[in-house]
Amino acid sequence: MVAGEPGDRKRSRRVREEGVGKGPARAPRRRPTSPIRDPEWGPAFIKTVAYAPFPVWVCLNGNEWAKRQAVKHGIAFKPMDNAFAACESPTALARICASLSAADVWAFFAGWLERLPSPFTAEDRDRGYTYDLAFRQLEISDTRTFDRPAAGRAWFEKTIPDQLTLGRPDQVAIVFNRRVNSRTSGRFQTKVFNTGVEAAIQVHYRASKVKQYFKEGRALRTETTINDTHDFGVGRRVTPENWDALITVGHQVNDRLLQSQLQACQCAPDATALERVVLPSTHDGLPAPGLRFGEPRTMALLAYLCCHTHLFVGLTNKSLRALIAGLIPGYSARQMTYDLRRLRRKGFIQRIPHSQRYELTVEGRRLAVFFTKTYTRILNPSLAELDPHLPDEIANRSPLAKAWRAFEHAVDDRVAAANLTT
Image (cartoon, rainbow, N blue to C red; front, side):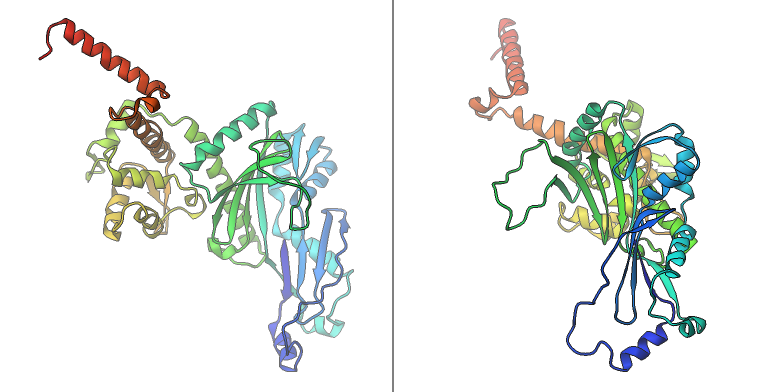
């Protein structure tokens, strides 16, 4: 979605000075919205406001545009809601999707601007009063259809609890297929999972977010929604440079989320990699202190490397320090600088060129996930179950505790049989 604003602000300022818009705040009178059937874009709409400076909202769907281009090129496909379920030539379709540009958006707007009523007279337009387009919302999606939908859904539903303690998403939402408000009759309760209920992972970054859910029971949908281009240091005007920059950001965020989930499934490293991490080493002639497994500061550091918010623009000393300080009171900026140096020399992170930000390497994320999973899901729960002071009624419900106590009894019997008891 893009919004149009007059290109020359002087006229808008002059209108306000003459008294238009003064008094109590009132909701703008918008013209009724009617869908447009464009030969290139399909269903679309344009909203206008009758008050100066006469802003315009334009809403377009890139998937509808791609479908029409595929038909023009004779590419057969099977559609699904806002996506493609199958295609006879995926490579050609990918080229079509990648070719969508800011010029196509401008062509649509310019064509309909000539046909729709305008508050600007011919004299206004001759004097240079016209509209400019700015990004209001941009959504970049990645939809992956499974040959075996049941296997895909099983993977995603297993990924949701797996990511709760690793990626730490802002929320895991349950999305119902009906609207519920105070006037809706009936009783509602959550069942995970049932017909008509979808689980969704959402990660927010400032005004933007990335969302992931299983679409129509057969496709994994990952979509990044950018509501403020300044979140990523990109201008708001719809220009080729800004368009390319935002599309790149969206694809990178989607890909990072998918890669982080895949790496969490297969994260076991070899013995050499573990030794290099936990023991002191040398990197480019500089000392690299070891990251000792089990040390609270190290484990907090590695756990928060898996945080999903780093998927957007990487991490900084300030952003990572704020997370770790929640677990380790008094954690300072100097300690964070020292830890970032350790992580960089150990190959966990790398500096983003021309910035003070860092991003995780593939091996760094894999190792961070392995250490975090091992510590939080194996070591800590197991030690609690092996506690000799654990009440028998609780220990008997734990297979590990029962096996460990049986082993202890067997060892005691063997020692007694050897007459080694005192």
